[in-house]
Length: 296
Image (cartoon, rainbow, N blue to C red; front, side, top):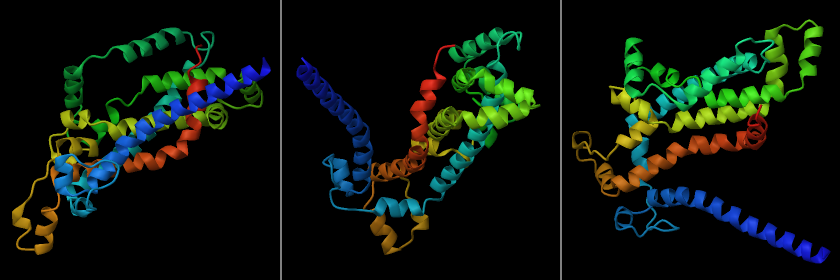
């Protein structure tokens, strides 16, 4: 009986490993295929014959990107957006979550406030009221519209509220006995103990703002202010012959690229910052989600 249980357990582990491997492969293959297309010849990419390896190694698309000022301008806009939005979101989330983690005895209208937050999580006023509000504040075509629109992530607030409520009450009581005020208790006790969930919501914020393109499309009137994802969505290969002249090197490079290879190269470069940041925050991810999602 013990042997049968052990064999079944091993079979389950193998099956689970195969399943998780297949899921991981399904996530990696699109990234790999995009890279291979960006490194392939123009004709091979157009014919759709690129598979697991590049067909005719060609780095002309990456050379072209190095001279694309608008691409790097949009890249810089996205970096500013992520830094400002992630910082603001972090501060607002922590300051909202701390009082909302208290009981109704300590914060009288706590339950009402939580229901208001949940309502706004499920329903919103729509795009037209949002646009009118942004326009009234004079934020159209400004970096701040990308930062402030959606600057209060309700889902993240709920995660942090639940995490704070799971921290031992005795720690806060001991801090109060020692003379600590609310600000010191929050930033000297709660925040250091909440690194997993705070790293998780920071990751959510970074990925969300880096990948979001719709606000840039709606609120930006100048292409120079587009964030990276909006620029990529709008881009096509436009060859300005007036800037090329008779430079044989430029003419040769332009003959080696197409919309497909250039777009693949830009998309792959756009993914790199998230691929670099994610491994440093991933170890906190599961722990933060697990503890922050426990029902009150």
